[in-house]
Image 1 (cartoon, rainbow, N blue to C red):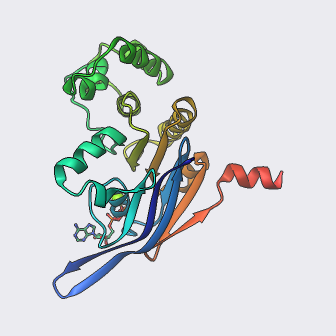
Image 2: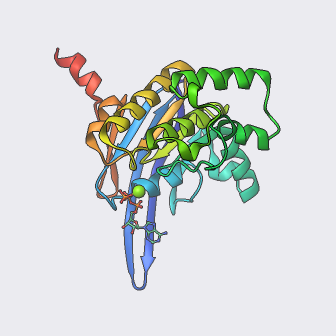
Image 3: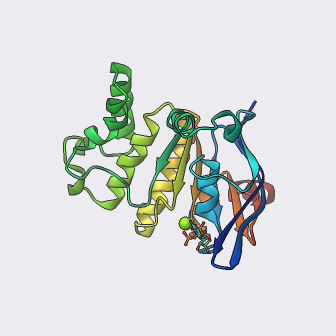
Length: 238
Ligand SMILES: Nc1ncnc2c1ncn2[C@@H]1O[C@H](COP(=O)(O)OP(=O)(O)OP(=O)(O)O)[C@@H](O)[C@H]1O
Ligand SMILES: [Mg+2]
């Protein structure tokens, strides 16, 4: 089965004072293994809210999230079980990289494995391979605060990829980078879906970045609409 994650009829509102703001109004969405998904939409349209709900960080008011066809909020009903489930299956890439500034590139990439006492020879080999692909191998013993923004984000991608998690969530991973670096990051994310069969679900408000996606979703008026990916469009019309 290709499908790995599915959201059905997801609804979420926020109350402030007497007013209720409906942010998600019945989102239906499916994600498959080994693909890069971009979720786009205007500022305030609910992209981050949707990502938090899909990744088990926040609960919907209504609706269900299925991981490999199992209802996650039902199966992992307490906080401890849910965070254990997330740790095993979901990795995250953030806008501000979330690296430890004084640790080296290698130390940052290995940190989650080190904390889980899961550093092995195989993982170190994979780390070298990832650093090569990310073009940061030469910087491996440098403290990350001496790296450029683009390099730092490549470190955090390597840190996400070294885990066994099948899904990587990213919220505006290039929000802090210039255009050239942003395109490079998305191109690497795409490569990672191909090389390691990972599913990447990334939020971006930059339409140009979506050209790298296999599938593009747009969030508008609380509903998610699927667009054909650029690549598929081109194949259709060339
Ligand atoms: N915890 C919260 N309490 C109240 N309102 C919230 C909360 N989180 C989000 N909102 C509101 O929900 C709406 C959607 O927010 P969200 O952060 O999901 O938007 P977004 O599409 O990610 O925007 P951006 O592109 O600016 O990051 C916004 O109007 C926001 O003010
Ligand atoms: Mg956001």
